[in-house]
Image 1 (cartoon, rainbow, N blue to C red):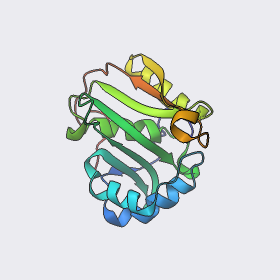
Image 2: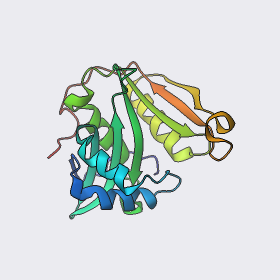
Image 3: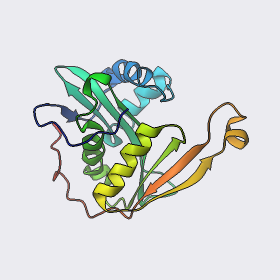
Image 4: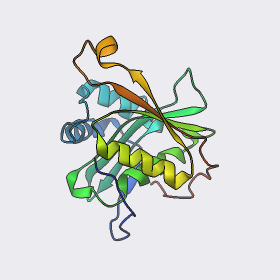
Length: 181
């Protein structure tokens, strides 16, 4: 995933809720977007089914080129957690990642969210650029703190995951940015 600058108005992406039939394409997309952690095909199917209201696919010419998964953490109901953002190489540099996150936050499932949360490893510069860019665009601070430590939580087999907390978010008007179909 690369930080997406201003959207290319000549690019037509359909932003929509995923369906179970999208599971295999989401699995392939995530696998092609290193350094994202690949989930099992079953996990992606659950996200496309149980979490359809808090996930989004971006499609162009019947091909899924973007994916955002997220949810409202039960322990922090005033927040929206972005789990993964994947953008195919063919769709990078067109503002798609920011458009997808804004569209997802405009949904009723994210209504009243005051904070956007995500975790990112230190070495994932494109993700840091994306979330720092969103924080700037929203005029909201981004605060970093350790969420899962390399040794304590991953037995030394995965880099430390840093929590990025953006907010408080500006008041949002559903549908004001990108229309979903």
